[in-house]
Amino acid sequence: MKFYLNNLKIIRRNLINFHRQLSISQIYFQHSESIPNVFDRKTKLKQRERTCLDPNYQIYSYIHERVAQSIVDRIFDIKRTFQSALDLGCGRGLA
Image (cartoon, rainbow, N blue to C red):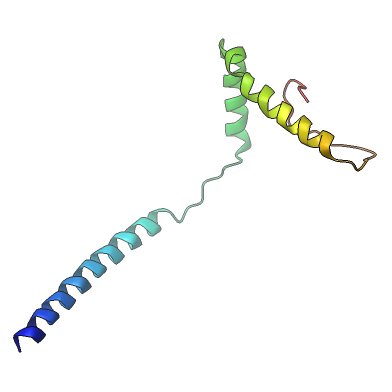
């Protein structure tokens, strides 16, 4: 009988812990239902303007240059010829 009582206590404790975890996860998911607008045009415009006004912009522009070099390398690997191409947001025309 003692064995069963101990097992019942363990099961009860596990159920209580499970219920707590479930409650916490429900609270988390209730708050995260709103999806942020990642491509908010107004915000992106403000970010671009702030970046252009930064006096240290040239110091950090190496990231754009490195990405542009990588893209150009990948484009040169393509053997197919295209009649036209679209350049989306190249910034200063690095590529």
